[in-house]
Image 1 (cartoon, rainbow, N blue to C red):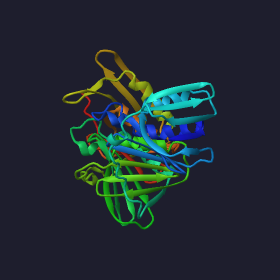
Image 2 (cartoon, rainbow, N blue to C red; image 1 turned 135 degrees about the vertical axis):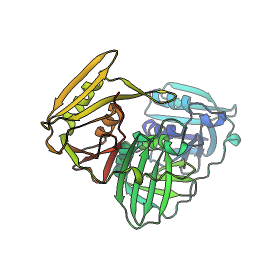
Image 3 (cartoon, rainbow, N blue to C red; image 1 turned 45 degrees about the horizontal axis):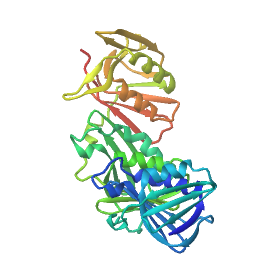
Length: 379
């Protein structure tokens, strides 16, 4: 293999490929990047078994003098291409199991890995795509993935559920203490119900970060493939049935309070500095407990009491309030802050149905996005 390519083009594609590299793996070969140069194209592949990524490079700067294939240590190869001071780089596979990397006055000799040890990556067949705007998928991930479970107690809850029925796509994430849900109307497409791991969605969002345009999604029984430009990004799907969350969604709200989102967020962040931590059965969380109180004069108070540090109280004026009774409800400030940050709207509403009932948060201009939080008892 002997190729020359613009360093920036190669580095741009290596940054995408890096999303499939494991930090560590029981299969050392997977820490490498598979490279295959044909007569006209360069293919790069990475995989950590959960995520697999492939890019096809056929840039005008690519000159393939001799086709070939190899596997190179991934992190080291990316680091070399990142720091080498050259506009173009030459990659030459020699007879001593090394890849020689040349750029201007620099030369690196990188030991290669056994190409035959690299597993065959079975990408989903590119048929019958669901087409979305990349901005839609990035918004979905930003608005939901933070509500997934961070432990493996219930593995299915570590993913985001995508359930399409009659062209209404319902996206749901929950860790049993809060829930994020987005509803989209999509073009005519077959029904499906899949759950995508949260880590895969995080990486998917990163590879799409600077891309604006159409993306295609392809499905199999246990995999999802994202395709855009010259990139294939594939993730495994989670096994099991996602729980029916419709039962916990309140429908009757005697109390609705509207706030300026930024003002409410600032108040909650200030008060939560003093809030005590909530404890789950086997681990301490950062779910700091605060309380929202509607007073008899219909003013709103955000407060917390910490037996060790002290207390904090701040009043905030809502933009509107529909309430007949005074009420106090305790909840996790972290969950509430993350919910508020998911909205782009300048004004949000909090709808309550009781002190011990879940409450929901919605934004005026965030169509079909709902954040639900379970209350916590204030002892």
